[in-house]
Length: 250
Ligand code: IPE
Ligand code: IPE
Ligand code: MG
Image (cartoon, rainbow, N blue to C red; front, side, top):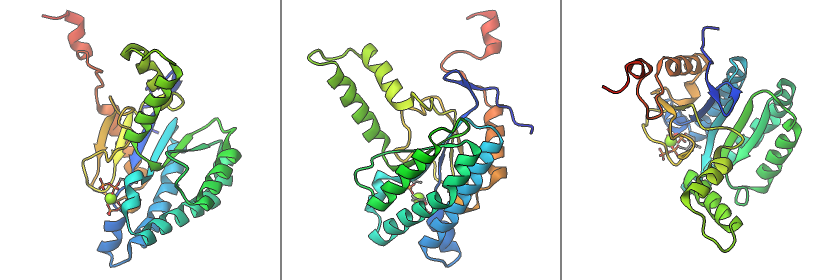
């Protein structure tokens, strides 16, 4: 397939790719369509990318579907997004299960519409045995919130004694990246160059790829290109390039 997946993360083969699916509204506006049409087209793009990610052997794919700050949007838009999310789950769950994909929602569950919460619970239960692609959908998600909650939990487990940083760090790592591993490659569609409160801890050493392509236009080839770009990068994790290590520090 011409794509190098030699990366190991958390001891399991394959990449953890995270995508900020941005640009739905602008895609629609450029066509004189309502923003809802952009979200609808965005769902179709998500279906294509999940399928392609599975085909090319990505281990974990985390899609940013709705941020905690997105509650500030007009209620009609929010309602439409959750309606589409339910439609996505209704259309895709059987197919995901048949492909061995395990779906998991990350983010808060206590504020989302009940019908959407039920649809998520059902989709997770139906795909829980999947051993192929681990598909995570971030809904009502805020990375700062996730880190804060993980820290509170870790501290409360320590009882009376306040944990030292070297105790807290592995707990946070487990809580935030335990099942999925840290992000290897972060892609943002839609032309903006920011993280918008997405996976801040998990992206500490992620390779970042930004594309001007609006999310509804993002296709299998764009994912392939981003993965190829990832393969051409040298990840150093704070050390020196392999070529420099041979001669030692001179
Ligand atoms: C991303 O597209 C989808 C969500 C945030 C739910 P936007 O709706 O942010 O599209 P733009 O950025 O306005 O074009
Ligand atoms: C980030 O996009 C959230 C999702 C893609 C779900 P936003 O459009 O909400 O981000 P900002 O407002 O441009 O930072
Ligand atoms: Mg946006």
